[in-house]
Image (cartoon, rainbow, N blue to C red):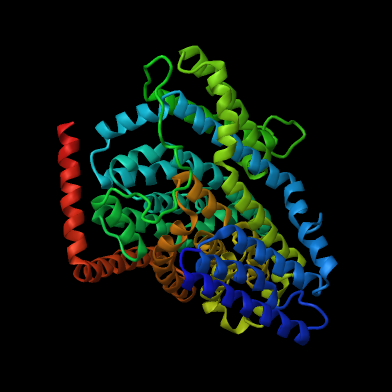
Length: 565
């Protein structure tokens, strides 16, 4: 805790939680499954995290609240639930999917450390200073790289972060802004890419006799306003060089005071102190080649797990079907281990680092990933308890059961509900898994195909939005890790930007339900998004005129220095 006031607020909040638990324990003697209280554990975790600026204890308390509710406040049963193999910590760490993602994280941490030791990061930093001449170009380059790596959001977050940290640092872009750019091109891009692990997941959730899952996924893309408008927003704020909310403070400190972090927290301290290779020579290929190999091998790993080379599988020699059937928790680590072996051999043959030095990267890369792994473990446990142990899915299904009379406005309602569930649970896949079957049941595709597609788009967009904003989301956590940004700095700076897109997207889903003309609605939304940002820029520029003048001056000096170099 940073201050006595913050310390007091934290424990007052804890006291409120205890009182609420006592009251609902008396009011619901028969249990909490499928009630609104199923969403209490993540709400507690998020509230405490935002108050205390401390993630670990907040997530743990959220998990503890979930265990208490599930166990009906029985002390020993609560401990067994919290630690147990059904919904607790042992459960998520024993799950093959979760462990696959953790292994992938560790391998990426090792590869990043190897690229630092081998001189790749240092060489890329030198190249970037010569090639990328402005802050706008650095931000757009980050965005474009994020869009290109559309295969998987986890892969996107860590790879883009590793590649773009030296570039954005040379242009004095704050770590919070980098984390936003990474996060905004992770889940939103994956959700509108037909060839991605997300397309595979969503197509599996949509059970309809009239149309297959992949076809439904592709049809919802132009209606998926949150994801599309997030990209429009990134392009606009980069071109206009504008910021607002807490992000403005971070960018001001980065440009004027050369402070990339603003707050005292310095995660991954020392990890960005790039080393020169033993040979004394490094090239930009020492960064690009391992990353390219990583992308290729991960793609191969994904289609391999989908049965691309298996004659008995549905995906045999069909890339799209194989990708739809892929298992990211197996395919990504499989590709990553091949890329890691390539990187080791490559640097040995180059003489950049020796065997002993390269082996130091194994524990050091693991250490860099301890924080995100710990947060992910708690977040997965919280999600498991909320969704499965307490039945949040059943609560949402019941809440929407009587909304048939509002069908044309239902996509907008579905969007907001999915946003809230995604924010509370920290999972877009889980949210879409809850909402997509409901959408297919509420809208009969044979009778109302357009409304069914719009409803699916609203569920997908809302799930991504909630996941994007939530401090307990795995992609939000890994975007912070990829940018080497203090996690709660990323959360607090990103939320105002996300809420701006939410407001415009909500209007879009209302219009889509009424008009049902895909390209007209999308054109209106893009114009409305750009217009909203122009209005915000005008208001913020007047309110913080002095800050913008100092930032413009610092940016001009930086560009002049870059041109001289």
